[in-house]
Amino acid sequence: MKAAVIVFPGSNCDRDIQVALAASLGHRPQMIWHGESKLPALDLIVVPGGFSYGDYLRAGAVAAKSPVMAEVAARARAGVPVLGVCNGFQILIEAGLLPGALMRNAGLRFVCREVYLRVENAGSVFTQGYNVGDVIRLPVAHLDGNYFADEGTLDALEDADRIAFRYCAANGGAHANNNPNGSARAIAGVFNEGKTVLGMMPHPERLADDRLGGNDGRALFDGLVGTLAGAQ
Image (tube, one colour):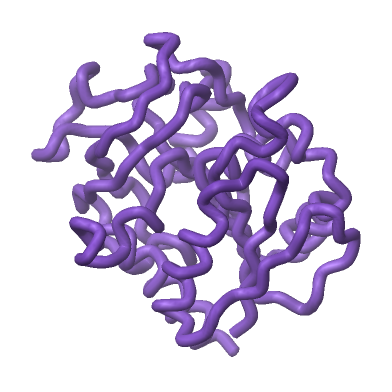
């Protein structure tokens, strides 16, 4: 199985994703600079977190115009799974691969802490390592993580089961205090129509090893790799 991590100026979670993926893959994924206009044959593309281009103009807006993103978009349209984490989620939205917008946090402050998520869809290539209703713990670290979409779009996401994760309490219940950024309907991650593209604000790579204080993120990478490798 061949995977790649896209690297932008300002990426700061690209190596974290590489290490987490390598633990599941058994080998390191390729690191591809954003200036490349061609990609090799790949089974998975990851757009990592960080602060591409210093979040100038708008988080993810400049990176979405990088040469490599035209090829990422083409591969996504062809069905290659694409995962975007934090700034990667922002980039995928700016590139038009996912609906909605990621705005400044409701509290207008950078949020860096652990949160609880409820798994809403366990049938995608990304979430098959979980069960619907599972509550997992992952870190967030962002200023622009407030997911917004109009009510029609939100309803369409609900109806098509395209919400991957929601912020929740430790017991899985909903409460405003457990939504770290004010995201509409507590949304923490969404899919494209084919559920082959996932954008999520929390960082699974930061809790994918017990030595980091937890491994709730490991199931995402193990399930993803197991599903894609098994399909070959």
